[in-house]
Length: 198
Image (cartoon, rainbow, N blue to C red; front, side, top):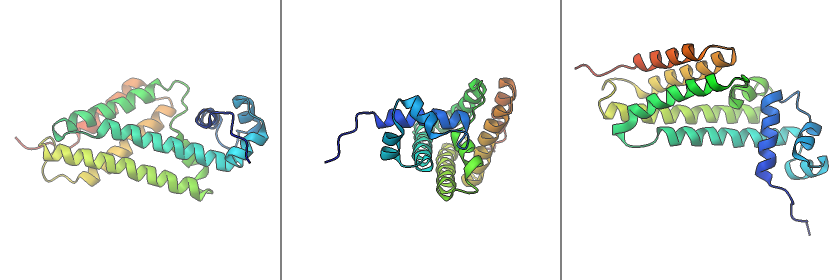
């Protein structure tokens, strides 16, 4: 009979995530993660498999948390849809500016480093981007229903544009753009949304 695990699996995943996020996949060794978690390598391998399998768990966990967080920010009544969208875009700019270590987003970082060679990472990254775009599209459609965005606007196309802007804010922030610049981009992106004619 297998002995019960004596460690908190989520805590280990969180610690591994910090290591992968800070150092990147290639530069992070299982020895580093074992040292950071206080677990022996045998326990790590036994619970999570090889480094690639551990990263897949970490990446999947992170992507799920990103989608959940955005879902909480964007879901709600039609009447508040534009306020939610504005708050989300400004919050992304502020969070990016606050990332003084310039670690960026693990979704972008992991996909950039691994998606070309790792089908699991590529598929999870694509699914996450699709989910984020769908959440934006739903909110923009709610804005349209509430009369905050022009009735002939295409929520799908606007969602794709907003997603590109948000991903761009993240990339520019990682490159060292100022908070003022990122906030200006957020403000401009919201200003170009087609408003109803009055």
